[in-house]
Image 1 (cartoon, rainbow, N blue to C red):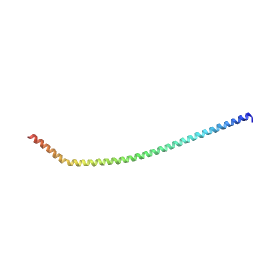
Image 2 (cartoon, rainbow, N blue to C red):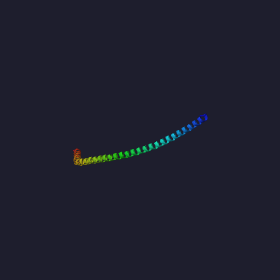
Image 3 (cartoon, rainbow, N blue to C red):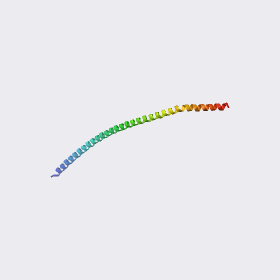
Image 4 (cartoon, rainbow, N blue to C red):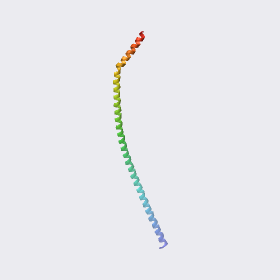
Length: 111
């Protein structure tokens, strides 16, 4: 084999190697691009799932809070009603007490 033939074979091998490397780089870029797209899709799906879970949890907590609010309002109304009854029951005593104080004051000034 002559020196020229060897150089031609080397150039052919180098050319084929460049083609193989170029093809491998293209495949690598395609794989990376596909993987990025897939990862973006997975992230979006996960974010959407988290949003749904979050909204559901918030809705459940709102229901709990509304229930607690109603219970507290009911308790407050019951206590208010009890205080009204107690106050109404104390009115005659208060009137009597004020009347006695007034009478004492009048008695004290008339002496």
